[in-house]
Image (cartoon, rainbow, N blue to C red; front, side, top):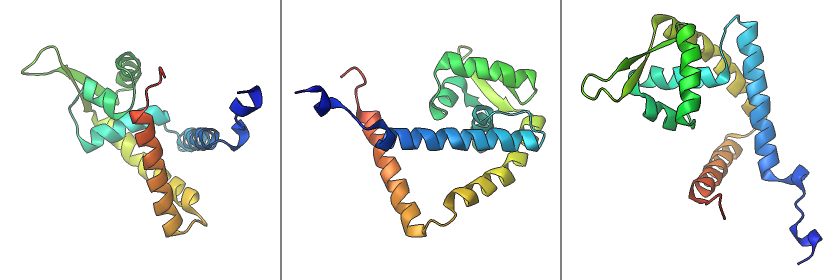
Length: 154
C-alpha cells in the first residue's frame, strides 16, 4: 500500500461536512441568543431542554443524554447555577446521587429559545424536500449507529 492509497480527500469527506454544518448551527444559535439578550450557550440550552422534558434528572443521566462526560457537565452546571438557571439537590433515597432541576428563570429562558430554534429549523429545511429530509435523517441515524458501534482504539 502506498501513501496515495490511504490519503483521504478531507474537503469531500462526510465528517468534514457534518462537522462544518454543526459548527455553523452552533455559531447561528450563539448569535441568535446574543441578539435576543439571552445569556446562554448552545450547550446550556441543551441542558435546559432535557430538564424541560424531564425535570429532576440524575446528574449522570443528564451527562449521558447530552453526550458530555461527568466532569464537563459538572463544570457546565456550576455556570448554570451561578446564572440561577438550574439547581442541584441530593436524591432523597440515594445520597450519592444528585438530581438537577430547572429554576423558574431557567424555564423562562428555555421557552424564549423555542422561537429561535423553530426559525433555525425553517432556515435549515428551506428548499429541501420532505423526502430528502427524511432520507437525511435516516442517513445521519446510520452514521450515529456506526459511531456508537465503532471502537476508537482500532
